[in-house]
Structures are given as structure tokens and as C-alpha cells.
Image 1: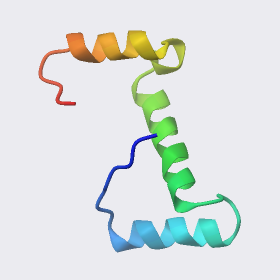
Image 2: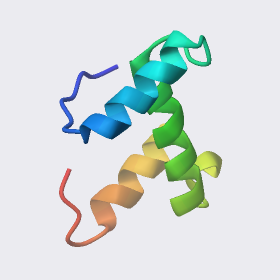
Image 3: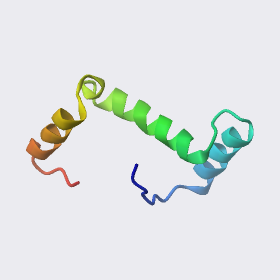
Length: 67
């Protein structure tokens, strides 16, 4: 896994922390990973059907996408 830095509104961070404190998610990072996976699944319908190499190839071939 890679470490990234993101800026979140305080309200989002507080909500994630509440879910973490309630035991819904084991960590804030895991809550964000799950939310991102759900977002990607919804926005990129084919995401779940692609293996990692195919997904990287698709991203590289798409014009105007910054990595």
C-alpha cells in the first residue's frame, strides 16, 4: 500500500472518527479505503472486472488523466 495525504473538511473527519469509535470500522484509514472502493465501483463499472495490469493499461491509454 502507498501512503497519501488528503485534506478533508473537519466534519468528514469527525464523522469518520465517530464510526471508528463505534467500532464500525477498525481505523479511519480502513473507512476511507472502503468508501473509495465503493466510489470506484460505482463510477468505474468495469473496475471490479479488470485485473491490475489491465486497469493500469486503461489509465495509461486515456488522454488527459494525470497519475
